[in-house]
Image 1 (cartoon, rainbow, N blue to C red):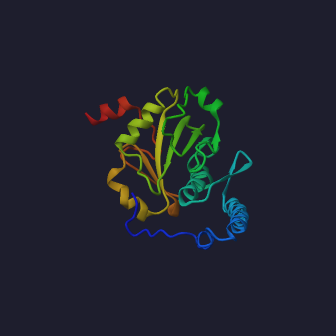
Image 2: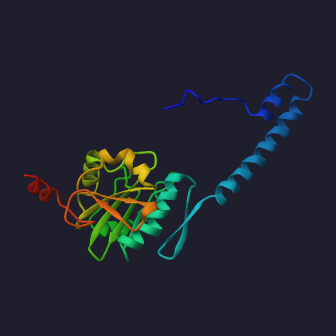
Image 3: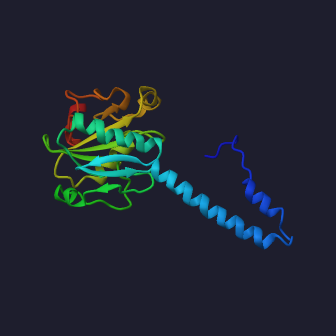
Length: 221
């Protein structure tokens, strides 16, 4: 949704160029302007590259595009995974600019999962090998958590998995979590990056407990 407070104005050098339209200097000014724009594009591209967020996956350093969403994803990879899925295998890491920043398709296929390129992937997927669980993690900064609708979508997307699914919603702060607290689905977990050593479990006997759909239904009856 566009903000009514947004103000738009023409870039100053472009305005100066347009003011010379029809004059004898027009052609020369156009060439000068285009050259300066190309220089600016290169400079901004370098600055953007320098601002990319590094993450380490299986000893290799990769980078995510800048932004708060990917800051949270980097914390999931470096802090959540190491604490709650130790020795787990990262199978997928998304990126706001590039859907597949990391994708171990072969390992997912071995677990019975075939990904539909049009499916709405979680932000991070970890194979927690110690428990043999597939942990699906959503990073929430501007879009919603794993609510009942999203939980059903993930269950459908990963229905062919040969191992149990565990679903986690991640937030940067408690304040961010509070905004979505009433939407979070039962039988899922919540992790808050600013309190990285704790998990919140929505109903169940154990943190990071795997549930089957039939089990959840039978317990509710």
